Structures are given as structure tokens and as C-alpha cells.
Image 1 (cartoon, rainbow, N blue to C red):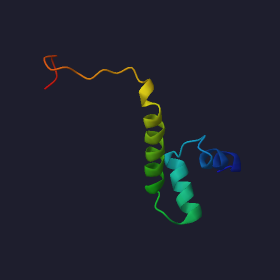
Image 2 (cartoon, helix red, strand yellow):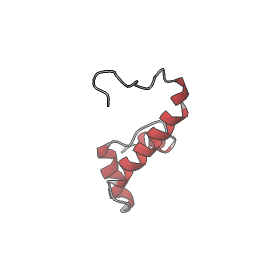
Image 3 (cartoon, rainbow, N blue to C red):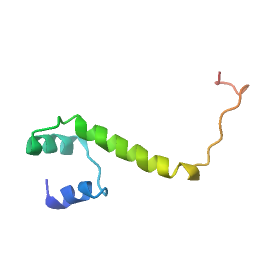
Length: 68
């Protein structure tokens, strides 16, 4: 992995993809490769939550087919 790619990930400008997770596990030995995508998911959700007020979404109303 290039230092440029690692720098992007560490600064929140790049995502941890599965191959990167395996490489990070190989470099640092711990945590497991499964840990890195979990951190990425948490980071992505946090970013989405910060801009959720901009989402143009309305709750479903009862009586609409396909809702309970």
C-alpha cells in the first residue's frame, strides 16, 4: 500500500476497502481484518448523520400499500 493511500485513509479522505483491511492486519498484526471495515462503517454513518437534516425524506403514512 502506498503512503499516499494510507495518508488518505488516516485523514478521512479514503475508505478502508476489504483489501486494505487485510493489508492493515498484515502490517499491524492486530486488530483483525474484520475490525477495519467496522470502523469504516461507523465513520460513514457518523458522516451521514451529520448531514441528515439535508435529506428530503418524509415518514410513511398508514394506509399506503406496502406499509404496516
